[in-house]
Length: 185
Image (cartoon, rainbow, N blue to C red; front, side, top):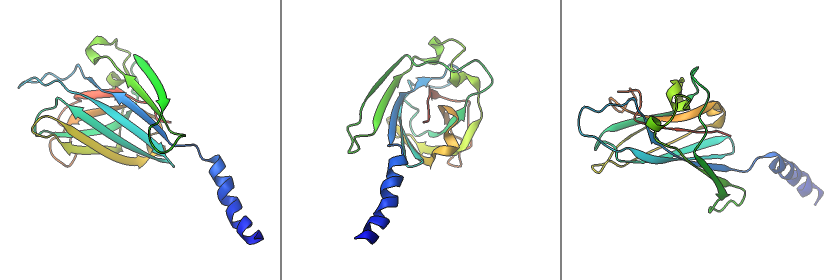
């Protein structure tokens, strides 16, 4: 019995120091710098950011994108331009998942053309290349990009930017189509 207690004690103590998993949801806003030469699309979407045990899983669900186009997304640090923007509205609610300790935050952003120069998406911060996600849009302009990365690598991230990709290597074709500020905990 004592041996069992000695084996179980470190596990019990270790579980007390771990923070519970977190989940945040963000809404993308189109970037004002994109001037399409072809048909006009209405990009929109959400980012779900889940962190558990030092790993962050990101799922971007986008609509209104160019059909069959390749998209590349990654986290960025804030650039040297003006300070980070503040979200238009934030709501926190209990997760509907199986983990009662997880929380969900939903942030609604206004389109970049409606924001002042203080928007963090317009700071042109350096990309965190380890967080790169690549996917191709469907015929109806829907695309889902997913990725997992150690949370420590994106701890300083300020926003997620989605670009057109030249190909599946992840080479960028523009400065960004749609963006959302994020907070990585």
